[in-house]
Image (cartoon, rainbow, N blue to C red):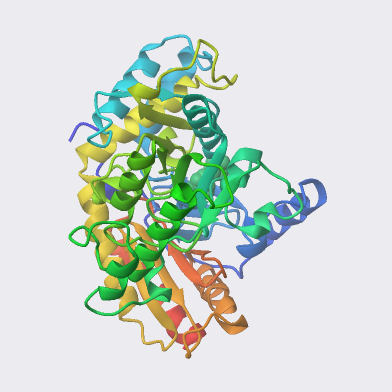
Length: 474
Ligand SMILES: Cc1ncc(COP(=O)(O)O)c(C=O)c1O
């Protein structure tokens, strides 16, 4: 193996190891200093009160020397692990040579675009362009909004309830979560949010008759899921009904799997149905792969599971390899209509991040991490399903994008269900396992481990998570 060490050698050996109360004294001191100077918008350490010192692979050490198994990966960023030596070497070598280039060509930039093409979904492969507009996922979304407006001459947008697309004004306009938007309205005009299919909360009849009655797809193509049929019907109405009350949109923005919304995996016919409605109406289809992409689901892009090609695809999070910030959008070459300078940004050429991305692609391929993500994801979901809890309503996901939804015994999301995941998270971090939450009501446990987590680590971590569910939720 030439591309870095095997995944077994990437981590702190002793994880999990917690030898102080959480937070320990050094973490407490840093948290105290942070409270004194940092913004009131700081969020993560309020839920997981630790200060961080060093990360390796799927493990992270806090300021007191406690070592955690990381099922969170910096919110789905560190797909090849913390401080992957193969990636760090590439970043380091580049950093010593050249860092900031705006959009002048460099070996790294051109190679990165070429490698993104190699791993592109089928319909985009060899027929795409890649644009770097700024370092974040939100920047990539802003770019996609401009691309759709520029190419269609329309300004309205269609997105989904339960979505998260980022925190800048355009991205926030597409985001469904009220808590992110409140206080900032009005955002961009004429944005419509329609329901995202959520099978757990909208069960149809077993033979799919109800779904076929509403689904715009022909009955042979309808997947038989009622929530999918209803969602597609609303998309079609919003776009095609001359009395829909909103202008025809430039594009549809959709997460192939909703992350923040609760790791909601849409039924089989959903993305294909969107593709058909978009094509019938000359509306662009944009897949937001910022959380679901770059190997997270066991394919390079989550849309590959459905075999559906978008017109444009946003990416960020993991694509800088080592957690270096870089956002990008790949779009079909037919939409490459910008004049020079049509989409700009000072930080659209960070070469170390591109080297990091290249090294990460090599590492994933050399170590067969897509297959590993598929297998380990199945193992994790099976373990979660074994948890003895009357409140565990569903375990779902794809690859290492894992969600477990908790509901009250009567199947409702009440106040009690909302606190369950918090209690699980606290139990876990006190025992050296970092997990996160998601879901419209915070009632979904979300696991996003690095793709380099080993089976042994997952077994140890899941012992703790299952114990947490059984003792904290019941
Ligand atoms: C699906 C999705 N889109 C967009 C974003 C925004 O990315 P960023 O936080 O880098 O701006 C996120 C961030 O979590 C995301 O999960």
